[in-house]
Length: 459
Image (cartoon, rainbow, N blue to C red; front, side, top):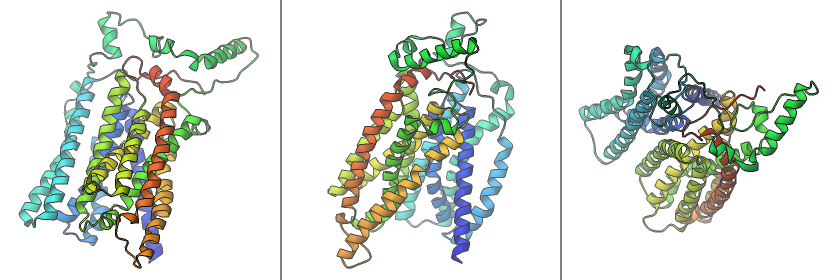
C-alpha cells in the first residue's frame, strides 16, 4: 500500500536524522577543541556509507532487495547495540591531548583507505565477473577497514591508566604554561592578547555598553542580564535573530542546494551526455564528496589554528570552483564530464561539512542540536527548489521538445547549470561578507593557536 510505504519512509528518514544529529552533537561536545576534525570524520563516514551498502548489497546480499531490507531491519540495530559497550562518559580535556590527535589521524587514515578501496572494488565489480570466494575476500577487507577504528576504544578500555594521562601538544596553551614554570597561577581562558587588543571598533561599542550596564547594576538601577556575543552559547531564539545566523544559512542553502541538484540527477545527466553506465560517474562523485567532507575539516582546522582564518572563507572558495564546474557542465566540452563531477563532489563535501563547526563556534554548543538541525533545512529546501522544480521543469521541457520522456543531449540541463552557476556566484559573495563579519570572532577564539572556551554570558 502507498500509505504504508510513506509511513515507513517517514519513520526511517527521521530515525536516521535523529541518530546522526545525536552522534554529531555528542562528539562535538566531547571534543570541543577539534570541531572541524570531528565534523570532517563523522560527515566523511556518512558520505561513504552509501558506497559501503552498495558493496554489501552486491557482494553479500546478491542484489536481493528483501535481504537488504532484512539486514537494515535486524542487522543494523544489532550492530548498534553491540557497539554500545564501547560508549563511555567523556570529559572534554582542558587542553590539547596528543593521544587524541593521534587517534584522529588514525581514524582519518582508516577512512581514506576505506574510501579508496570501495571505489576500487566498485570499478572492479562493474568491469569483471567475480566468483563467490573472491567476493567474500573483498567484503572481508571492507569489514576490516570499517572495524579498524574500534581499536581506539578497545585500547582505551584495556589500558585506562595510560588513557587518562593527558600529554599536551607542543605549542598548546597548556604546554606554554608549563614551560614558563608557573603552573600554580590560573590563567583566564580569555586573557588579553595582541590579537584581541587589536580588534578595533568591532567590540568597542559592545564592551562600552557592558561597562555602563555593570555600573548601573552596581548602583542598583538595572538588573538586566547581558545578551550573548558571537562565540558564546546562544539559545535558538537568540541566534535566530542574528544576521550571521541567516547569512550562514543562506550560504549553506545555496551551496548544498546546488550540489544536491547534481547528485539527485547525476544518472540522468550521465545519460544525457551519452554515458550508458553511470555507475563509475556516481562512484566518482561519492568518493570526491567524501574527500571534500574529510579534507574540509582537516584543512579548515589547520588554518583556523595557524592563521585564524574563518572556515567560511573555504566555503567561498569552493563556491567559486562550483561556478567553474557548472559552466563546464553547461558548455559540455569533450572530456569535462568526469572533471566537473569530481570538482563538484569535492566542493559539495566542503559545503556540507563546514557549516557544522562554524555554527558551533559562532553560537556555542549548549543549544547546538537545534541550531544545527535548523541549518540542515537548507538541504531539503534547496533540493525542492533547485532539483525538484528548476531541474525537473527544464528537463521535462527539453524532453517534450524531443517528443520523448527521456531527454538526450547537453541542452537537457544547460539552463539549469547556468542558473546554478549564478546561484553559487551569489553564495560566494555572501560567504565573503560573512567571513569579513566573523573574522574578529575567530581572532578572539583562536588567538593562542588553539580554541579558547569563551566566558559565559549568564543568560
